[in-house]
Image 1 (cartoon, rainbow, N blue to C red):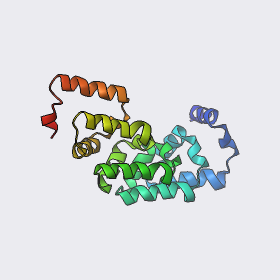
Image 2: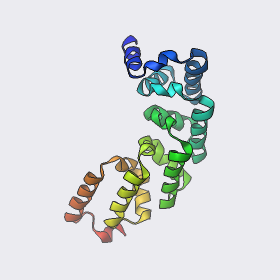
Image 3: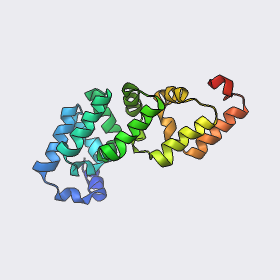
Length: 186
């Protein structure tokens, strides 16, 4: 739709300088090969137009392959990219793998890591040092064992998307009500 094109170009005017044959078509085609239909491709590109400036071979395929190695199938990978296309711009070595490694150090296996990412792909965009580790520590401080953290985060990874102060407050309220008693966590 023309309005969508106008909005996208207003947000990412350098799209007009990208090669149709070298960037636009290959990226769109790759997303379709991954399993997205035309509408999903359009929505994904509208949400994150700079995706078109990334290399299919050097950036998009390696990220997709890594998610598949964790245990996602093509459909889950396509859905993950459609939900959070910005993750395709993240560094595998600098951002994605360290986050995955940290979750494994908590006790998750590859399948659980993949499930968490599929349920809440924004998890991959959260800072380890400023977001994930402080939240895990706040939960540990309130009696959660790592095995319980793993169970909770596989089922409800969005929890890590909450603000730290709100997460602490909610846990404190639950504890005050006796609903977060240490004996019930062990």
